[in-house]
Image: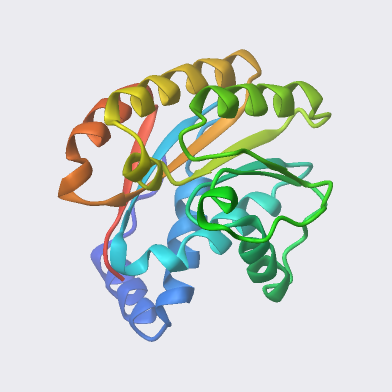
Length: 212
């Protein structure tokens, strides 16, 4: 039987967290969430908007620590060039990660020639997105792959809710076919309460990360 930490231990953990920066606390929370997941999962990760900017690097780093883990990253929130610069600044290993960039064309960001990125013409290209992800799943040689979607809430800014919900449902079905894990990130907001409720029904687990 798994031992449940007593109140004193939990109290000490909270005191220790109180001395850490929000960035460090986010890292600890993400490590805890990822470590508790069973294989072949689909996770809806809801994040307080104030701490959203702290999320992606710890999330990707947690997966990169797992042996032979391949990552497919769907970029809707930031252009690839900016994400790559942040990852390199954080000394993140890029060799096992592929990017599908939906946002650079929309915001006029520079498109760079890089074998690890595939650009889509617009954030409304939902069918193209499904095809691009399926292509990546078919091409990926690693068996241990996770798809990280950043973010569904940003996609909802550019699209009606119903097509996005259908896309996520279809995508989760394809991930299951290829035995690929999925993490769908959303900013916690009353504006997206309906889609959150719908998408949460497709996922195995929903985790909320409150303000740090």
